[in-house]
Figure 1 (tube, rainbow, N blue to C red):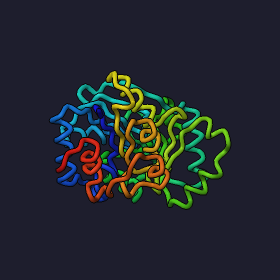
Figure 2: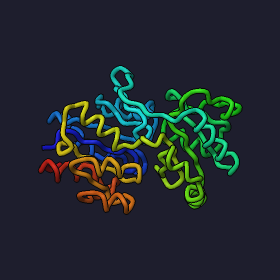
Figure 3: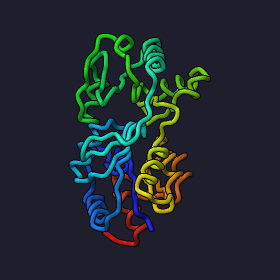
Length: 266
């Protein structure tokens, strides 16, 4: 029996316009009424996911920054963390600058950028967070960095990813959270590892865990969970890894997954 459900947010629980369908709201209420643990698992920073948690009135621990940090939103306590060393983060920022790619970083849940532009505004609208301007990221970095994000056209980022030095794959977990977001976290970071931590935290077995997502960054948790689900708008690799595929996020795929697994109807 499933006792814990982990879900991605953007393009999984949320529609393209960042809303939750009526049917998905009913599915969330069903989980709450039946004591099923709901874990929000996102590439977003903690402050952004916490806002979602309060909107949904869901106060279980949450997976943030692709699994780099797990927080308890009730007291802002960090339960689990895995971050990039300062010198390694500087290497990434230097690369972005050399390539003329927009880059921003997270340190201690604060979003830092060197410039405010249309890319910054887009990310601000997505996360509902305010950027903090610094004159020079390279000089600013003096502590572990949670996440480094490159923001550009997909083809450009894809070409860059394919040309990265070989040692990068030994130091960083590198993935697209969206076609235009190339994210770098510590090599040991994944939603799957964070979900494994929470499964053990609650004293559960993998067979009692379900996960649903749409992106490359969701594959690890889909593979870890006893039941892994892909929404129809998911990338092909995730669909192949999933136990089954449900409707698109815009068509209440999350609710359809809950209906199928728990044998209910909304």
